[in-house]
Length: 315
Length: 151
Image: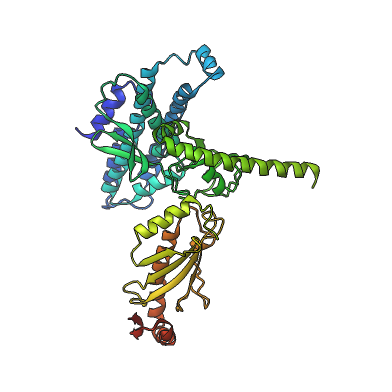
């Protein structure tokens, strides 16, 4: 079956009519009209059809998809991670009516939604490049990544995959898998962990969970706005801030160590679900790191308060 | 001695350098100081340094990986990016340093630097370059053949 049909069936069949999606047919029509309009075999650098219709409409759709996905993922994670008074408050609000299985299903649906949309976007851009004999599609993709409109860059995707594994492992009876979904799992290749998620047609994404600063498994993981994952302490030292001040205090000029993008620290996301998953999967390492981090944090807190006291006393 | 409370990162990098050495690079830490590395780089093929063996010293400062490693050529070399003391002008060792880079990356960049930058100089000023090569011949103990160092 062609991907276009699979995609449309998925979006209609899963009650996702209300959710934003890629207008596959509409975008294909735009590409075809552009091909008819231009007499040259290749699309010029400034094609009025592409510049004025195709890319802006695709960008809007991508923005809607990412926005919707992030919002729904945050809500779902909030429900799962809520504890104490917060849980009671959500119960009163009527938000916490979902049981364990419903949470798993919704988490799985959101992961599929993210992946199938990323495939749809990739396919339509490939088609664009094929028809126009150009690399404009690739350029657009990299431009979108810098704008953080790429769904696979979203830190919530990583969190949802971790949530799915966490819930599945604590669940008693396994349910039949979706036709589209082959599952998510945490794998260790040569001792290096990664989150793997498989979709139909052997489409697979791997999220590396090795911190590129300490070269160890990420501990107390944090995802920067560019989508790169680091240990919290490593991210703090890269951003030249103390653990006490936190990443919010980072200078906007500080860049991501991997992609050198600026302004990535202030809106960094703490990956709580991933921490729960890794804490369970590699207990010995987690305990060891916990002790090391504790020592480091105590040291930094002492230094912080000493400087605060000195400043207060005017020394 | 800098071996006490050596960061795990340095230990991991050292282990990887010894177990999976990069092509044309041999790097081993000093016995008395694990932050000091003795490096040997083979002159890249199809470059004016082909056949040459170059000794470098690499030191990891206390702030590493937040600060770049200090690298210096011990073998005398003629290169537009390397001064008389063997200090290298390389972006990733200055303002472009990132803690995500490592010893391996830095050394591989050196090989790239000697492969590409000097070829241009050699093509632009062959006579000047050959003179320089013969001047440095004693430092390498190699026979320069058409400006390429041969053992």
